[in-house]
Structure formats: C-alpha cells, structure tokens
Length: 207
Length: 207
DNA sequence: TGTTTTTTAGTACATTTGTACTATATTAAC
DNA sequence: GTTAATATAGTACAAATGTACTAAAAAACA
Image (cartoon, rainbow over all chains, first blue to last red; front, top):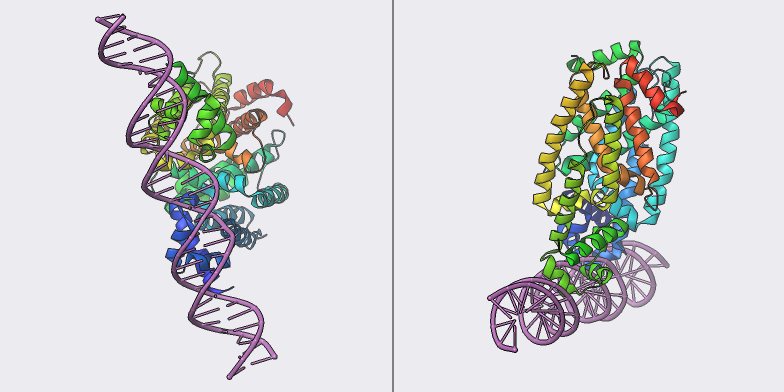
C-alpha cells in the first residue's frame, strides 16, 4: 500500500482510539499525518472509507489467529479469546463507537453480522470437540453453549466500553481483567478433570 | 413538573431512542414537541440538561424496584434483573450512546461510577444471603461472584447495543433473550436443590 | 387595573464539518 | 524530453447546529 495511505490509516487509528470517531475531523487527521486535507481526500474519497479500511484491517488480523491447537485444547481455547481482545484493543475505537458505525455504514453492519454468525458456528464446533475430549461437560440446559457464546460475544465487544464509562483512560490492564472474566465464565462448564487443569493454569485463582 | 418540560422530555426520549442522540437536533425536538427552539431553550438551557434530566429519571425508576423479596429468593433475584432491563429498554438510547454521553458529561459519568460500585456491593450482599440460604453454591474460585457481577453488568449495559449492531430495530423480544442469557449464566452457580427449582421455573430449558 | 414574572416565538450568528473544485508539483511512461 | 499519470496543497462553500439575544404574549399578582 501507498506510504501516505498507510500513514493516514495509522494516524486515524490513533486519533480515533484516543478521542472517538465523532471528535476527529478530517482536518485533524490531515494535520496529524502532516498532509493537506486535499491530499487526504485524494486517498480516501469519503470519510467513511477510512473507517471501512480500518475495519477490514481489523477483521483480517483476527482471522489470522483463529485456529485451535489440538494438543492443548483448554489452554488454546482460553488463549484465543485473549488474543482476539488484544487485537480488538488496538482498534478499540471501533468497539467504542460500534453503534454509531453500524448505524451509518450498512456495509460494515452486514459484514459483521455474517461474521458473527460464522463465529458462532465455529464456536459450537469447537465446543463439541471439547466435550468429546472431556474438557467441557455436556449441556445441562437447552442451548446452554449458544447462550455462553452470546455472553462472551457481548463481553468481548463491549468490555472496553464498559471500562471506559467509568474510567478516564483505557489501559492494557483491561485485557487481563477481561481474560479473568472470560476464563471464570468458562470454569463452570469444565469437567472435573479439566477443572484440575484449570487450577494449574491459574493457581492464583484458587480459593 | 411543568407540562411543557414534561413534553420535551418525553419527545426527546422518543427521538433519542429512535435515532440516537447525535442524530437528534434541538430543532427536531422542538418540532416534535410542537414548540419553538427558543421555548425549548427556556426550559433546558443547554442540550446536555435534557440528557441529564433523562438520566436521573432512569436512575430513579431503577432505584424504585431494587429490593429482593425474602420469601422466594431465586425467583425474586431473576425477576429483578429482568425488571431492570425492562426499564433500561425504555431509555435504551442511553445505553446505545453510553460512551458518547459519559465522555461529554462528567457529572453523569461520576454518578454512574458511584452507582455501579454501590450496586456491586449490594449484589455481593444478596449473593451472600443466597449462599446462606442454600440457593447459590460457595465460591470455587477467588472473586468468582465479583466476576459474575461484572459480566452481568456488561451484558445489562450493552445487550441492546449488541443486538442493534446486527439488527435494524430493537424490539421488546430482546428483553426475553436477555432474560434467558442471564438466567442461564446464573444456573451453574446454583446448588442442586436450587437447580431443581430452576427447572420448575423454566421447564422449557430442560434438555 | 396596572405591573411584574413567566413563558413562548423568532431571528441571528459563530463555528464546525465534510467535501467539491482548482491549481500546482512530482513521478512515471514512452 | 515531452507527455500523461499520480499526488499534494489550498480555497471555497453549503449545510447543520447549538445557543445568544430580542420581543411579544400569557399568566400571576398587587
């Protein structure tokens, strides 16, 4: 990709993350990138194009890490959720303005919608494997794992928002807090054997 | 309260819920309320005052339903979470624009922050009672119920957002979906006895 | 009734913002 | 080396928005 274009995306991302989409004007982006607004517009005809480009960057990054190692199922499962959020953290402006963005941009909205459905199917598949391998227990309620997926999805998407409505800044610590939240939400679904394994992975969580 | 003031708040709420705060101008509110912008401004000196007024209405409404009936602990516990979300639904613009609002309005931000802390303390107290009464099990991990609270908090605050990033409209159904999500997330923490009780409350969830 | 206060309407303004348009400058192609 | 393309800068503009200000109408009050 063109160097200027790259620079625009990086600076936009920084500004968006710091101040939120609606508080970042094209002039501010151009300033930060050290170019003119005219030039900015040459590379991205519409403001929305910048956001779209960043969105698809994000999606690509996440896609690239989505696979479970078959040797250490539980660990791998827990790792992925943290890796995803670590990437989301890089693009957190997107999550903070999720509603605004999807309201304005049907393309992103539809794409995310499809993505989410595919992710759920994948999730359920992985859970099936985990059940067969004695890591997760069987469902005790109907659609229990569907429900679990939904909760994890909401928390992944809005954890940073949840922090920022109370705190003034978002720090990397929030990723660890997220990690704790998610792993603890998984715990009740583990078999006794896997619970032991969990305790060795997170000895500090023992009562 | 003044009739005009009342009308402004109602119409603002409707518009905010339908289109999101940033897409509702003072002119639009005045139009909808059948008054002039000048008059609107007489009652609410600043745009932010409308939002603040609505916020404190919301907080008051929720406060008014927050008490657990001691005779039917589990049912009462589950009911409250739905009642809260039902009220939140009435004011869902607030949740959809949570970040934007708290970013702009320190007063609301600080107030919510305090509120959230108080709510967590209340939650833990209630959980203690539920444990003592054999409804919830003891903690198996450190801060397990703190973690549960956080998850419920995020989901309560952002469930509607989560729906709206995929769907085009928000319907009352989303409240039932929320209810299912939350009750299923509670299930693993119930004692065997309480699980039986759960099954009689939600027979349709049996596998 | 006359006066003061409250309520309502209308206008005007400063600011911001996205973007369209034009004119150079730089680079690539032949 | 001339031409064509790409890239950059600068200006201009229309639209929207919050809000300040003024004046009239209505209500309350004495």
